[in-house]
Amino acid sequence: MFHLVCGPSQHGKVAAVIFGYFDESSTHEGSKVAALCGFLADPRIWDGFDHAWKKVLDKPDWPNRPPEFHMYDCVRGIGPFTGWRLAERLAIYGDMVTLLCDTNLIALGSAIVVDAFKNLSDEHKLLLAQGGLSEPIDFVFQHLLQIAISSTLRYGNIHNPPIVEKLGLLFDKVDPSVASRYYKLYAHTTDKHRHGGMLTGIAFGDSKEFTAIQAADMLAYTTYRYILKRHFPAEPEFEFPITAPFMRLIENVAADGGVFSETALITLVGQELINKVNKRFQP
Image (cartoon, rainbow, N blue to C red; front, side, top):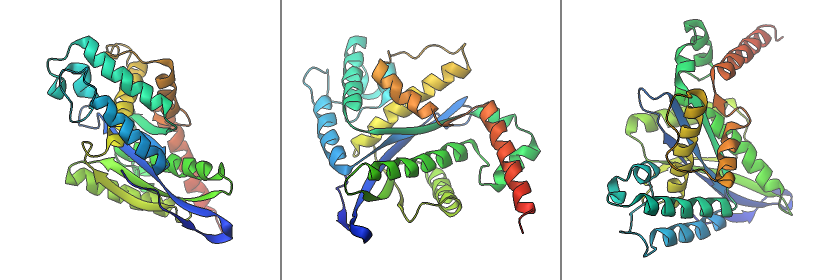
C-alpha cells in the first residue's frame, strides 16, 4: 500500500496525498454495459483495509487460500475458487462486502450503455469527439476523474485545519493500447477541467499486489450487473445477493450523472451544442 504523504503548505493548511484505486468491468468488445469504479481514501485508512482484506483471504475456513479476490471467478466458481461450494463462495463474498461497508471509503464510478453511444448520429458523435469523447470508455473515465477531483476537495474541507489534497490514481493493469488511451484521456481531461494542481498522475498496478484494486473489482463488476439488469430487464439476475449497505455504494455510482444512458447522452450532446454556440458568440 501507499503511505500518507503530509507536509506544510500555504496558509497554514496541511498537504496530503489521497489515493484512489479503480478497475473496469466489461469494457471488452460486444459488452452491453461498461463500468469503471473504485474507491478513494486517506492512505492511513488504506493501510488498515489492506491488513483486514488479507485477513479474510487467510481465514482457515476456505478450501484454499486465494491469491486474490476476483469477483467474476468467485461468482462462477472458477480459477482459485474451483471446487468451492456455493455456500463457501457466498461466505467469502459476504465477508468482503461487510469489510467494504464498514470501512470509511468513498465509492466512485461511472457506467455507459454501449448501444446508446453506438446509436448516436455521426454528427453527434463528431461533436462529442471534439470534446474528447470518441469511445465509450472516454465517457466513464472523464466522469470518474471529475468526481474524484470534487470528492477529494470535499474530503479535504472536512478536516480542521482543512487539508490541501493531492490526488493519485491507480488502475488495474491493462494492455498497452488501453493504457495509452487512459494516459491520453487523462491529459485531455486535466487540460479541460480545473483541478488546481491537485492531480499527481495515474499509474497501473497488479491486483494481486494491491488489495484496494480487488475491492474496486468487486464494485465495478457488481455495478456492471446492476446497470445491465436495469437497462436490459431480460438479462439474468446477479448471481449473488446484494445487501442494502453495498447497494447504497452501487447507487452512489449511478448518482450525479454517473450512468450514460440514451437520455444522458442526448443531454450531453445538447450541452455540447450550447457550448459550441456560446464560444461562437464570445467577444
